[in-house]
Amino acid sequence: MKAISIISIPVTDQEAAKQFYLKLGFNLLVEAPFETQKWVQMALPGQEAVSITLVTWFPELKPGSIQGFVIHIDDMDEEIKALNARVSK
Image (cartoon, rainbow, N blue to C red; front, side):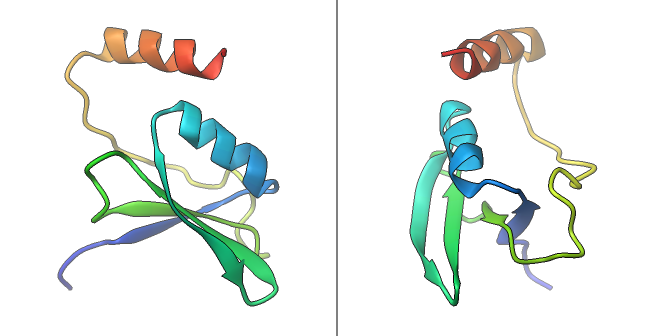
């Protein structure tokens, strides 16, 4: 193995999830038809090597079932304030 490039995030509403991640500061990389579904791929600015895709087509993955997601930040208190400000807009 060389790297992890895409992490699937199960969601019930791709548009609502996309808007949520945009508010958190993610960029939309791809939004396109995918078989009978839609492919929505996002990443943090400058971090396109690892991205997320908002999926609705895996019935065995319940929306919100991601149990662990590790992010790197410099100041947790400041990051929480900034994220709360973005989400409450």
